[in-house]
Image 1: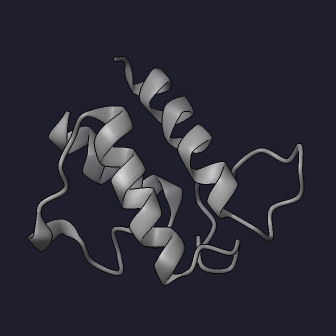
Image 2 (image 1 turned 180 degrees about the horizontal axis):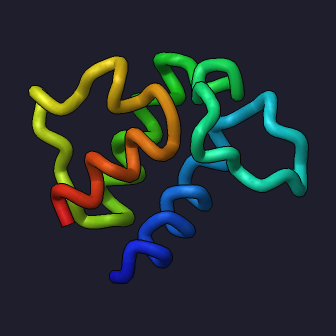
Image 3 (image 1 turned 135 degrees about the vertical axis):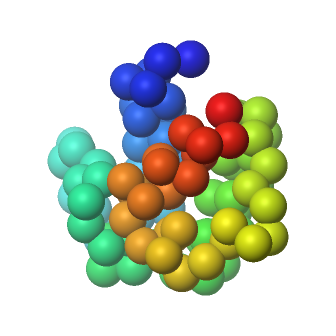
Length: 82
């Protein structure tokens, strides 16, 4: 999977969990995911979907507030694991 494909897939996974993002708007990868509506429960679902759909397992030591701060931060972590 290319970096572009990975970013597109992550955006597809993120979109349903960002409840403050207007329908049809692109997922802003550099904005705070919490401000876009990602809460702690949605983060757990997000993590499970990332692991199942992208075939990666994010180790406990990489599960930090910074990892889930923005889509770009999350993408950078995933890229290290692919």
